[in-house]
Image (cartoon, rainbow, N blue to C red; front, side):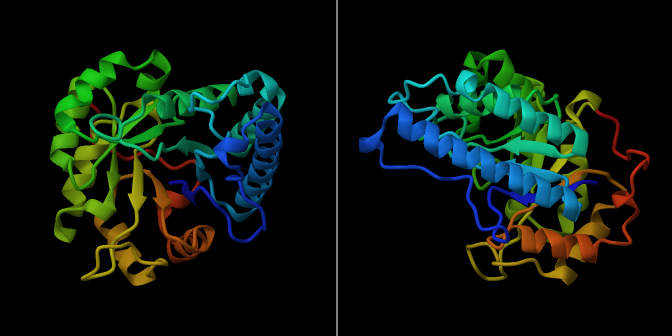
Length: 286
């Protein structure tokens, strides 16, 4: 089990989301912002390696306006050496990477360019098939149609994620039709008592070449419609207990970012799934 967090690190004093007003776009400003973001990403990855946090979700602002028609820069070529160096560090450190676009995959509000851009970043880093692109379905009825239009690189990296419009059961159904895995999103769990069954259903959609199943832990505050600000260790340990014996990589997704992930590592210290060289436990993949 690799544990990690998403997008930003509040401990090191830099951001991978540097951008600028689109009206001020130029290749020069994009090069400056991208260089700053990649430099900060290198610092975050070093922090994560030292802290034992081996899962990280990249900020989609890493290359500003990369998926926007205003972009005229061949950023993948311009920063090829930087991406290659980051990818080498990621592989050598045993870190797993994901990149989640901020828009759904299909239906109103979808924007395929975000998914193509995410796939290009992961490819530029030379990452394997376990580097995924988590996707909210948007309109489940249109997901398959949009999936058929996607590039091969996007198709091979997608991981469908349950939300308020697409339940775990519906996600698994759609994912089986498309041949992609489902990332379990605990924030939209239908019932705390159904965690084990939902995790098992999602885990069965992951093939060996996909890497371990991905799981997002970010429960709502009881009675609220927004996520809690920070991790609650007792509630987290209850989740871990219900997830046994499944092995998966765990995204701790709270506004305080790496702080909650570090607390999770301490809380889960005695969980045998954190140990290297452990046997991968999951239901038979389909």
